[in-house]
Structure formats: structure tokens, C-alpha cells
Amino acid sequence: MPQLSSLRWRNAETVIRIFGLAGVLIIIIAVSGANSKQTLKEKMTPPADSVSRENLRIWVPIERTSSCRLSVDILDSAGLVLRHFIDYVAQPGYYNLYWDKRDDSDKFVEPGIYKVVIDDCGNKSERKVKAEFVKWEKESLVDIDKDTSGFRLSLLLDSANVRVDWYTFNKRLVVTLFIEDGMAKGEYHFNWTGVIDGKNINLIPDLKPGLYVQKVKVGDFIHADTIRFFK
Image 1 (cartoon, rainbow, N blue to C red):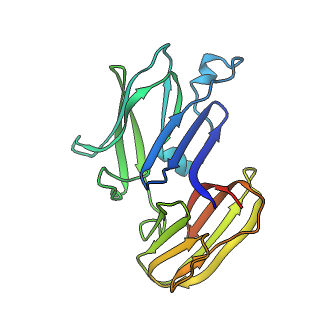
Image 2 (tube, rainbow, N blue to C red):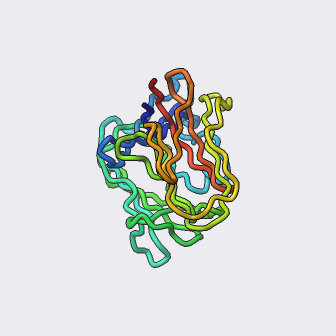
């Protein structure tokens, strides 16, 4: 049975999202040590990224010797906290964070530029992030199943082109699990349990156990997760 998580590796940093078996989304942000041969300027420079990801990136380099409380808040145009993004005791390191364009009530925000306030052990700084949306991003929702047996796709509009692909970590396409043109709005359950009823889609890939990147593409919107697949 697959276990689902979202994993992102970037040389001197790691950002991990893990979906717990109880259905609770646990966010762990861990940062690996930077290359000792790098200069301080190189260590403090965020890794290259796409324009869309760059708009949502909150890069927090922490150059101190001990752990300390780190908080990151996203504010609206009135200066009120729209999203309490991070608030926990952080170790020294280089944190590459990405906003999901949602507020504290898990609703998408309006398109625009938002202020980010970072408080690192009492040292405050500001950044900006930009929320933009592509077609189908607000009209589709992918939820991880509580027992990690698959995922659920909610479509709010008709005529969605949907496909599910698995890739290796070097971006090689391994298998296309599902393609459907013009799916009607509704709730769909993609699973690996062999249960089929109505709109359930049964996905049992004949693959070697290991890590894969699953991409669920709805129109021009892509939802990516890391899959740990077991026979």
C-alpha cells in the first residue's frame, strides 16, 4: 500500500510535508547542513526556482547557534493577520517555505501581493508574496485519505481533463495511472484497496516498491505528492 507525503529536496535545504495516518496534516520543516565550502553569501542565497514558486517562496536563513522561536505571518492589505503560517521553535538553518495561497480558514485568498512578517527570536523582517491562480486551481481539491490508501478529488465544475502520472525523482515518467477527458463535477475516490463502487477509481500499479512523485493534473493545475509504494 502506498503512503503519501510531499517531499522537496534542494541541496542545502529540505522541506517535508507528511500526512499522518489519523488524517491530520503534520508539517515538518527540516534543513540539512549547507556545504561547508560555500561562502556565507552562497549559503544565504536561496536556490533557483520557477517564477510561480518564487512568488510564493518565504526564504528564512537563520544564522545563529541555538534554537529559538520562529513565527511567520501573512498579512492582508489592512495589516491584519490572514495566515499564521509558522510558529514553533526552529533550529539554525536555511528554511525554504512555500505558501499555499490559503488563509487560516483554509480558503483561497484573492489574487494580489501580501506582506509577510518574520519574527526570528525577536528579530523582525518583512517579505512579500504574490497569489496568482491558474484555471482549475480553485475548482479542484485533492485530499489525502485518512488511511493513506489513496486520495479524493473534488471537482466543482464540469468538463475537467484529469490525469494521474507517477514519476521517478529524476523526473522520468514511470506510469500513467489515469486519463479522462471532460470529467463531470463531483467527488471521486482514487484508491489502491481494490474497492470499486460508482465513482471509485481503482489504482494498483505494477511497480517496484520505492519512492515516486505522483502528479494529479486537472486542466492546467498540477497537485504533486511523494508516494512511498509497497507491494
